Image (tube, rainbow, N blue to C red):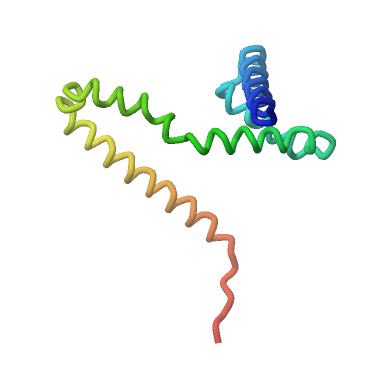
Length: 123
C-alpha cells in the first residue's frame, strides 16, 4: 500500500508542476517542476517523514522494472528500421557531433571550475 501512496504522491506532484508551469507560463517542463516539489517536500523536516517512505517504496518498484519502460522504444526502432537505415549516415554524424559537443562542454566547465581551486605545492 505504501508504494501506491508514493506513486499517488509522485503523480500529484507532477500534476501540480504542470499546473504551475501552465499558470505561470514558465519555460520549464511540468514534471521537472513536480520533481522539484517532491525534493522540497523531502527537504522540509515537517513533511519528510510523511513523504519519504511512500516515495521510496514507489521509486524502488519503478526501478525494479525500469527495463520494461524501454520496450516501447525498442518496438518503435524495430518498426521504423527501414526509415532509420535510410538516414543512417546522418544519424551517425549527429551522434558523433553531439558526443563531441558534450565532451567539449564538460571539459570547458571542468576547466572553469578548476581555475578557482588553489594548487598546493608538493614536496
